Length: 266
Image (cartoon, rainbow, N blue to C red; front, side, top):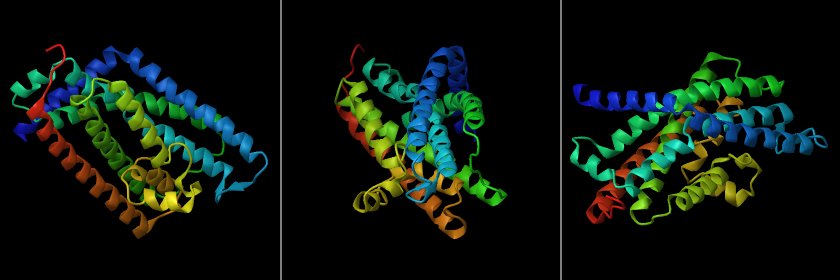
């Protein structure tokens, strides 16, 4: 427990930094807000001629968009760039000298910043709920518990992907390019653009073997009560396995990266 105290302190410092630079987070949050509002009106126009698309009613699609916004708000652009920036500005060299696990320290920073981001996200989500009247939500406690569990593992999974993408800056000096590629792949295969069940069958099947669907599609599907009970638990178990595998992959890549470290500006 005592050994984890240093990561708790890192998380507290990250939370204070997030509150000090709240303008950055608010702008990032508003970007997500504009995106979800845009998608709302696009889907609203599509549903004006259909009562149901791919098995989703309009009320269910509004709920799906809300979950998409929440999952995207858990980890911001700031959290993603903080990892790559440490590598590019050379400050990673100082981390190598500290008695800290680099991966755990970055997770602590991300969790600390995410607390503030989650508060802002909750406020914006409340606005969205007011705008999107008729949102479908779980009606029993068990579904809510499953949804929250899935949402937390979703954040862990996304951190694993972001962390690995950030480590690629050891081999490239273009963090924005890496971040954009990562975001494009994640948004497409996680269901952040459209529900995965609307994909062609072959692509939907492919996503079942990838970790991305656990970021948006699984928590959204549980929230909409499309899967429940044992099926929901199995989906959460798969999410957990992917989160652990990504964590271990991040460790392996870090071990390889530090052997050939090239520090820019350090």
